[in-house]
Length: 119
Image (cartoon, rainbow, N blue to C red; front, side, top):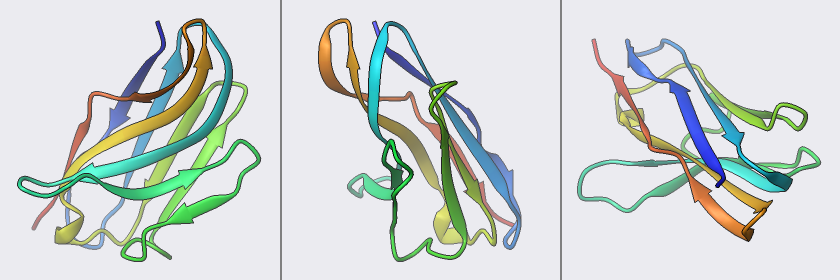
């Protein structure tokens, strides 16, 4: 069974930085797109950033120039470096990945990690 395990997150002051990491484990043949989403209470989960297997990236307009997504195709990991954090970045962040594993190709989610930006 494929699993996505997140680490990082926590509390940061406005203008500060945090780094999120996510590792995929299990029987994995290929990982396609990897990404990060976030959700606040009462709102839909929204895309923050995603990266293809060849390194093409997409960012939400609200994080462009502040967040950077990267991946390691050998270690099956994806990271999100978050700089110049704002209070409106406060949310639960979820790792997401399109993975071809032993059970076929499917979309997987991490358990979520809380990011709080506050002074």
